[in-house]
Structure formats: structure tokens, C-alpha cells
Amino acid sequence: MADTGPTDTPQGKEAAPHACCPEVYTKPPPQPTEKKPGQLSQEQVRQYFDEGYVLVKDFFKPDELQPVRDAVEDLVDELAQRMHKAGKITDTHQDAGLFSRLTLLNNDFPGAAVVLHKKGTLPQAFRDLWSNERLLNVMEQFIGPEIAGHPIWNLRTKTPRNEEVTVPWHQDNAYLSVHSIGTLQPTAWIPLLDTNKDNGCMQVVKGGHRKGITASHVCCVGGTWYVELPEDEIQNTLGCDLKNDIVTCEVPYGGVLFLNNAIPHRSLENNTDKIRWSLDLRWQHPDKPCGFEGIKDVIPMRSAKNPDLKPDWEKFESVDRTGNQQRQMNNEAGAEDEFDTTIQGPWMLRWEIVNHNKHTRSILGEDRSKNPNWTKA
Ligand SMILES: O=C(O)CCC(=O)C(=O)O
Ligand SMILES: [Fe+2]
Image 1 (cartoon, rainbow, N blue to C red):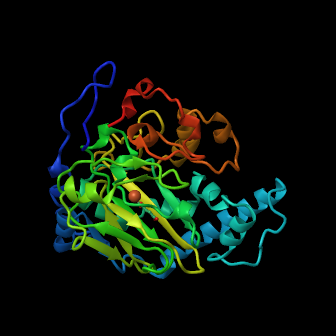
Image 2: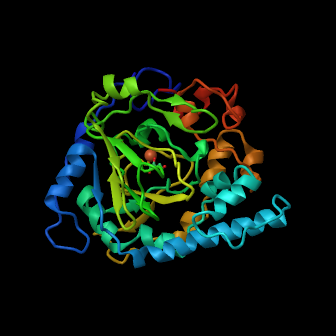
């Protein structure tokens, strides 16, 4: 069954009209008349709306991403020191580099990669990247001149052969409430090294966004917190042909993969010995529903109406997104414990739980009608 749309009834349970808004994902806004740095070509904008993704191979110069790599190195170092101080590990693997240290830490303390993935602080280099002028110029081409950052951003800590960081087929809308189906939320997926089939690059199903619906996902895959979009849903509900429509996106260092929130995508397993680091950052119109109601709000970044607007990072960071997710899902203890290796979120209320594991445990017996925002689809 596809997305059932907002459920505004008091019980939040009754069938609502089938939400279907293809134009949100397929129709570009009026294009800026002024030429600005970083803007995509007309053909690239067309591809983004028509196929649901566009890969720009040389968006950043390697130098521009170096501060981001350095910041990740610092985050790993800080994590190692904290784990050491807390007696979780005996060796901080000080001399291992950016592409192997977290793997060693994860061997000594399984779940270290998840602990880092959950950490919601934004080093200055991440803030600068997210509000990068050239990226915002692209966003203007996708969503117009009023631009906010979406509360879901991720540092992907993709250590080798680790199920917990291998993300199965999904539409990003599946992680959100039904209310944001009418909001275009472009993602920039930015790797910190060359990515390819061996180290777990991304795949998309081109055209899978065109109906503007969220197909039925199931929860949770294996030992993870991820939802999955079964292949028959991709074919039967979204109308894609998996033999011809899967595109493997080998994004090089300096490249950016732009996605939308309705296109099916996944990341492959990392079968190399190097960590496949990446960041995914999202934006949307500041006044539209973000789909993360009651957990965390958007961060306005640029406005044609208010040219002096600056992102209020302190306000944004004062809200603990992951902690709030966990609290909403009855895992108060997990939210308080800095080394908790579980992740819960309201998407667990939206989709059928076909597999319980340590992540879903806290929601066993949950009355789904208590939170109508997240009523099961
Ligand atoms: O980087 C990954 O492994 C998954 C990324 C993803 O699903 C996203 O950026 O929305
Ligand atoms: Fe995703």
C-alpha cells in the first residue's frame, strides 16, 4: 500500500486520501535570472527533476573538503578519548589515520561507529559546508530563494563489512511523517573519498520519484534501525524496472550526488579496508512541513526576503535530535547514555515491524495511536 496521506482525524487512524503529488518532485521552480557560482546547467536541473538525481563530479576542489576531513578526524579522536576515559577501550589507536582508526575502535568497542553516527554536533567545517554559497545556489535552483536546512543530516561512518552502516533501499520520506510528502527536500550526498562499488557507493532507482508517493516500507532490517523498501514495491507501486533503472553512482572525492526525498536509493556494502566517509545534508522551504514534527525544526539559511539572514547554529544545536527521537520511542536511558549503541525513531511507528531487534525493543507494545503524526501507513 502506498502512502495514505495526512491523517487529521482525532484518532489519527482513519483512511485519508491517497497523497500523491508528483509535481512537487518533477516540476522545477522558476529559475534564478542571475548567474551565480556553482549553479547547475539547465540540463542538470532537468535531470534532477526528471530522473530524481544528478551527479556532479567536480563540485568541490579537494582543498575545500580538507577542513571537513580534518573535522572528522577530530571527532574520531574526541570519541576515542571519551571511550578511553570511560574505560570502554584500552587503546585509542592514536596513530591510525582517518580511513582506519574508527574501524579499530569499532573492533574494540562494537557500536563505536553508531555512537559517532548518532552524535549531533556540527563542527565549524560541517556548518560551513552545509551553508556553502555554491550549494545554496544549487538549492535555489531546486526549491527557490527561501532555504532552510532540514533537521536530518548525517555523517556516515561506513566502516568495512558492517551491517549497521549499510543502508538498504528506501525513500527518505519513509523516515518522516506523512505531513511532509508535499515538501521537496533535496539532499547533497558528499563523500570524503572516491566512492565505488567496492567501498559501498550509492545506488538510485531513477524515476522512482515520479509518482510523488511513499511506497510501503518494512522495519527493521537485520540488526539495524533501517526501514526497507522491498524490491516488489519499487516495481509494482513505484513502477520502476529494476533491470534497467538502477544507477550505480560512483561519486568521486569532490563530487556531489543530489537526490530528492522520494527517489529510492541504497548504499552498497563496504568490502574494502578503508572507511567510506560521507555526509548527507538536506534543505527545504522554511515554511513547509519538515516531517520531523515535535522532534527538531529546520534551520533557516538564506532568504530573498531577508538578505541579512544568518543560520542560528546555537539554537539549532541546542535541540538534541537523536535524544529526542529516543525519548519519543521510550528509550530515555538510551538518550542519556553517551555510549548507547541503539537508534530509535518515529519511523518505527509508521511501518510494519517485521523484525524486532535491540533497536526496536523499547517500542515493543507501543500504542501507535498515541502519536497521530506517526500513525502507521
Ligand atoms: O550514505 C549512505 O550509506 C546512505 C545515505 C542515504 O541514505 C541518504 O543520504 O539519504
Ligand atoms: Fe537516504
